[in-house]
Image (cartoon, rainbow, N blue to C red; front, side, top):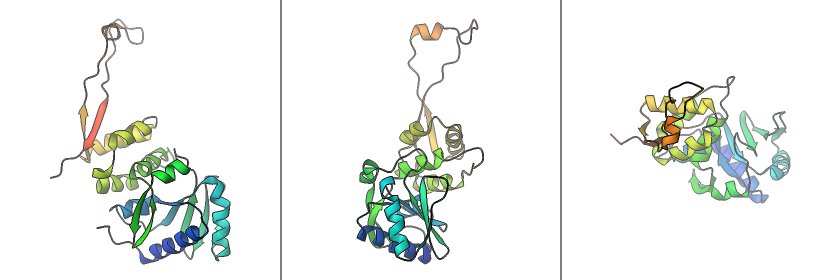
Length: 221
C-alpha cells in the first residue's frame, strides 16, 4: 500500500486532473506523486503533470479560467499554477525527455486515490530525475528514496544505459551499489586479440579492458 499522502495535495490533483480531462487535454501524472502511486514515498511539495508542448498554453488557460493563479517561468519547459500554497507544474519537457504521444501512450493507467489516470513509467521518472542532476543541483535524496522503495519495479539496465552520459548519474549508480540497493555483476568483455594487444595512450603496454556491468535487483531478504 502507498504511504499516507497529504489530503491537500491529493485534492489539488483530483481537481486539476478533472479540469484537464474535461477539456480534452491529454496528461499523465509525473514527479513524486507518480512514484507514490506505485508504492513510493509520499510527496508533499507539488503536483507534476505531463502535457504535450502544444497543449501547455491551453492547459494554463483552462486552469486560469477555473480561478487558479498561473505563471510562465523563464525556464521554458513548463508552466505553473497555484491552488493555495500547492504548486502545480505542467511539464512538457522533463530532463532528458519530451512529452509526446508516444510517452503518454506508454504511461500506465492506475488508480490514484480512487481516481483512474495515466501515470508516468517509473523508468522514465528515474531517468529524468538522474538527468536533471547538475553541479549546482546535486540532490540524490529523491532518486534514492524512489530507488529503495520501487527497486523491484525498475529496469535498472535500461535506466543505466539511458543516463550513462551523465557523470552524476554514473555516480548515483556507484552509490546505490555501495548502499546495497542493487547488486552489480561484472560481465566478461569479449575483446578481440588485436584490441588486447593495442597500446593505450602511446604506451608500450595495452590499456585496461573495462568490462560492462549489468544491474539486477537486490535479492529479497
